Length: 110
Length: 115
Image 1 (cartoon, rainbow over the protein chains, first blue to last red):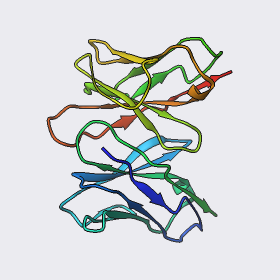
Image 2: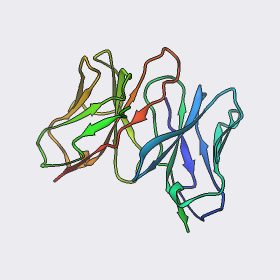
Image 3: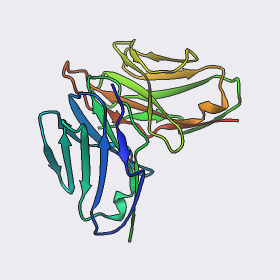
Image 4: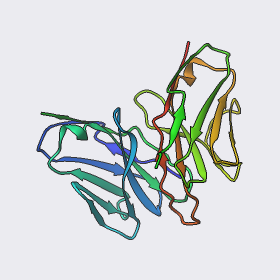
């Protein structure tokens, strides 16, 4: 397994704005997952996109995957204060262990 | 339906001591993974247990050991504690399906401080 590298390291936005963060990885994958971690709800799985998918939506979340560029993006639309958290991308090439990078720290201010 | 639970919530130990952390998986899950998360970093994989055996292991020394019980609950043991072992320890459970992806559900973690 490999870990993703999130960019930017930190992001500060106002409520209602969109937040975009990117992820790069190095080798081929079966799928890529995004996780969110905040003090209130811990580490939570947000969305999984498989290697044969290019885009996936879940509520206010939109994830894209470009396997040719080995990159993914997570867009949060109409952000809320509750979206304040660290976001991690986890590229997965086999079952089992998940390897996390340092994440993107998002702060949403009212 | 209870999610993943961990105990204790917080723990303070002294260098050289030993510690045991406990995890109960989500109902119906049979696989438990342990992660260490240092402040400001992402979680790092320690090991995974399935059918009471260690199935995969990350880059952690032998001071870190574990166990899985017949009811699928698990323990993480750390011997000869170092200051650098201070971290949030997360347990995750999943259901082995034979697929390449089994979603892992994380517990709230145990915050270990080594003085």
